[in-house]
Length: 82
Image (cartoon, rainbow, N blue to C red; front, side, top):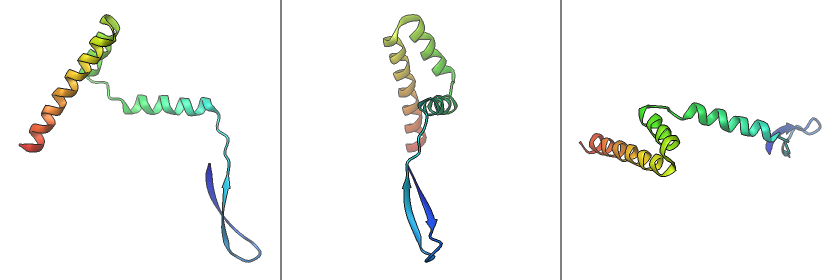
């Protein structure tokens, strides 16, 4: 839904009108996929998580991701608190 500002020709006032916009679900899903693929950084830890998930299963991939997140948190604490 979008809101348009339309100026009335007769009395010169501005009015707010709500207008329904139809969106094809395929465009919405394509936007999500493109946005996530641009935003997701693929570094060495991400590749390790993907490789372990595909080779050994979801649990090993999640554990690898948690180990990487813990390491990032420790580095962030050291940087933040000196």
